[in-house]
Length: 501
Image (tube, rainbow, N blue to C red; front, side):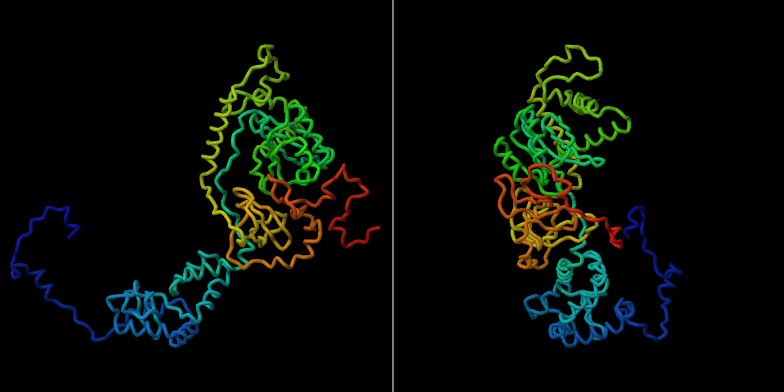
């Protein structure tokens, strides 16, 4: 009738004696053969159920021995009451799906899914998760043929406590961008980082306001030598209020702590293996590497390339890093009038607005697809993302302290680590037995198989430096480079089958 609504039909009554064809067909009934076909439930629920005969027999036995399912069977056969309160307590979870419940060959079904008794649910969970397909894979398999109240939650809890799956987790999704506050003047906040390129070590000191960076070649990477380079920049541009670094051994050494106090600046460290927290220094490292590689390829002077970089106006800004830091252009090999080289005051307020707008644009595009991970609480059991080359297992640990907005102190069997929230995944597993690491607590350094990784010291390093992770180097109070005679020697692995003299 709905399909005929679009037509303008005039309906007229006509006697049946005048409608020969329609009246004849309406009286011609189909004669049956007297044979009854198979029941629909038998075909739908037994013949095509994706469970083996042996497993079905086991489910039948357990269903018969389960008192609650026998009560449910009685209710299904006798009929459901109108009110839920009139049911026995063991049957109330099935009241809302009562229209789907049926019985076939001593088995209780919800639609086409067989109901599993309490006694064999754990066994079925083990069968479902034999291949470790994850939560969604298990749910999809189970929903094809099995059912019991709370099945989805039971599967999720079972999967979340699987140690094998937790050790091989996928990386967390990226978190929303959390930017540093825009500084109000040049050289107020600087980021410092070390990098290696073609077996040479370099130090980068980048200004958060002007994007101006200093590049130094390091003969040694000892804390004393690094501090000497940093002092020369501070003597030239002034002492910043904040210095942001990673947790490299040079920056957590005792000498650097003394340097921080004597020169009166705030030292902020970020979580290990989370370079995004010191993004300005990492961006300067990327530019420095690009300059050094291209200069070597072109056989040109790298320092002239650095000078040109400092004199080039930044994108979306009319001033160059040199102008924002020094209030003047630096003379280069390009012909420049004396007027352009004269000092010109740069409006800091305008620069701050442009920097803030640039950060907003960065956050706008970065936050597409980003999530805000739930904060962790103390004593939460977590898995820690591996970073050592060739290692894939996520280590188990316990949250001991929240250091800042997204940084946590984690205790493991090997010691105390500092990690960012995106490097941690909460788990429902049991807490690891931390008490077993007594031998490791007594040692000052820990051999991590050449990873250069060491646990954080047991004492606090300062108000702005929570416990940080150290690296395996000789001593924090180093007074110079390590001599060749004092270095640890380890033969390469390909010589292990030979006798060396």
